[in-house]
Structure formats: structure tokens, C-alpha cells
Image (tube, rainbow, N blue to C red; front, side, top):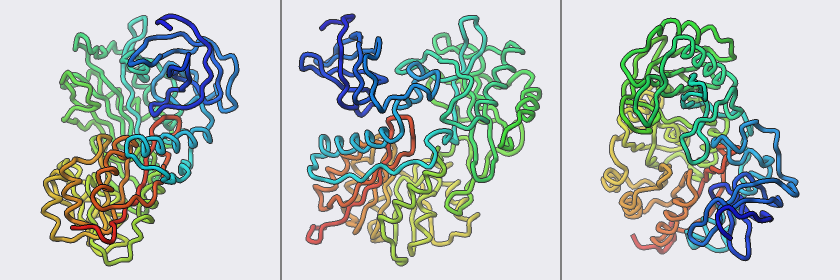
Length: 456
């Protein structure tokens, strides 16, 4: 088979990145937008490392799991690479993605992976939406999402991953840009003003924040933009409008400087009975109802009795720390982002939680110093790249009885589990949690227990 040739493929599995998997003459072929059971005529797009990569020309036989009514942009927008699957199939596939990573990368065999914990809402669940801005074929400003693997903008009138309020504010902002001929940033030339529209929603309080990221210091007619955004009718109250100054030639979602245009520079939400202040730069899980279930699952795995010293590495703004503080004697949170630590301290103070403290620094630097605290339980919630090797080594020297690992990347999770289980821990439970329906992303809660005869 060569690039451009056609073939008929039966899809028998799903790869970790979301592509359907079949075989042509015994060789693996990856096909986006397909489900297990699909039979499709495809065209080979390219060949790499002995594998074919194709695109669907037509479906000859659609799988019973295939759906085509989720969004008109399915197949072109890169935001929802599982939206063509029914929800039960998504959960089954995510469980298999986790199991495959645990076996293939971690080297674990005969480890039972629990069924994927379903999200309360499979759509309209995101409390954070970041819309890149660009231009259409007529050169007019538009907003939407990028096509898969590119920065080609796909205009969207509505995104079903987020509340309709986010799309309504996007529409109003785009209309404002068009009417006032505000230029849109282009990466190739690094010219143009408006870069992104960023919306944060607090589901419990119905507060909302809208941030326009610009390649400059000010926005013409900004008072009119404020009034127009405030006039949009939604179920949320717009309590914060900001400009984010982002002049750097990078792909970061936000620059480092904000200018408050209206209201406060934060919104407040309630999660698990705790009140949290969320700024534009704060890390906060995007699926609020499922986040409560994720954290409660982690607490349940820890089986805290009330007297333990608990360490929360990569603690962010202190969400897990506060959840754990209700069940432990003392909690110590560690985070490298200064603003996140300040938010964590404020959140603890605001909620009257006295048995928690937060330390600023890298997990790998602070963890060795905390050995003397003798934590019996450690919560580990690293970014997608996984835990730092030095942090894991320091964790092993602490020898906590239990480690509860919360992961957003099965591959790095499997790698880190392999290390920890080679250093005296046993893998007890793996529970996938669907935080991001209609995408291939999956979180996991994992319990590790220290072997009785392990050396310290």
C-alpha cells in the first residue's frame, strides 16, 4: 500500500489517541473518526514506522456504536475525537486504554481495571472554554477550535462541550470585533490584536468570567464590549471581564498580565461544600460535578481514619487538600506555582480549615524535607508528564503506607506505577474516571499500598 491508495478496513480496536485501529495485509492502520465494528473504505494519507494512517472516504457498514448527530463539526474540529461514539462505548474504550497502558508500559499482567466511572453529564459539562480567534475566507473575525493536529480554525456557532453561555459570549465578542474592524492575531506574521476568548463558569454560584486575550496593551471601544457582554442573556451572571495581555510569540493560552475591565478578577465556586476563588490563571478541574466524584473516589481509596498526616503533592489551589482535611489529622500541600499556593492558602482560610498548610516549591525539592513528618498517606496528582523521577524517589524514602495517584495520562501513570511497584509498593486498585466525555482523555484514581516486608 502506498500514499493515496484506497482500501476497505474493519475497525477492531481504538488506540490511546482515539483513532480506530484495523489491519491491511497484516499491517496496522489508524483511522480517525471510526468505532469498533465500522467497515469503511479509506484512503492512505501517509505511512510511518510500518503503520498506515488513513481517512474515511465512506462507511460501508456503520458500527452499532457509531453516532453522527452530536455536532456538525465532528470530523473537522479537533475538540471531540470521541463524539462519534455512543457514551457507553466511550466508557468501555477508555477502560481498555487504561488497561493497555498498564500492561504494555507498566508491565502489569492480570491487574483488574474497574469500569470507567461515568460522568453525570456527557455533554455541556465544561466550566472552562478557550476559543481561538481567526478569520474566515472573507477575512472577517471568527471563533471556534482548531482542526486536529493543526492551527486551522474551524468556526463554531455553538460547542456542546460547554454551556450555551460560553458560545453566546463568543458570538457577541466576534460581532463586536467585526463591527469595529478589530484585527485578529495571526501566528505567521505575529500581527493583529485579538487572540482568544476565554470563558470560566462557576456552576454552583452561576458566576462567570470572560477574558479577551490581546496582542497589545489596550482594546479600542472596550466599554462597548463590556456593555454588550453584560447584555447577553444567559443562566450565568457575568461578574468578571478582563483583558489578558499576551504579546509573546508562543502558544500559551494566557499571557502573564491581566487588566480588570469589570467586576472582580476572580469568580467563586462551591465544590464538595468548600468555596473556591478562581482567577483566570488558576488550575481548576473543568468538569465540576465529576470532579467531586473524582476527589471522593480518591478519599475513599485512602480510607482515612482521622489521625493521619497526609501529603498532597502537586496540590494546585488546594482542592484535594481541603477534601482530605475533613478526614485526616493534618494535611500538607506542595505546589510550584506561587499564585496557586496563595489561592490555596486563601481557600483554606475562607473555609475555616485549620489542619492544612501549603508549601511553595517543586515536589522533588520539598518532598525529601518532609520525610521527618512521616506522612502515612500521599496524594499524587501530577500534570500530564507524570511525576518527576526525583519526587518519586523522595516519596519512596518517606515510605507512606498508602499512595493515591490521580492521573490524567495513562501512559505516564503506567511508567510511574512501574517504578513505585519496583520500590516496595503493590498496585491495589485502578479506577478510570471519565472527566472529559467525547474525548479520548481519561483520568484514573489508583491505590498503592506498601508491602509489609519492604525495606525503607
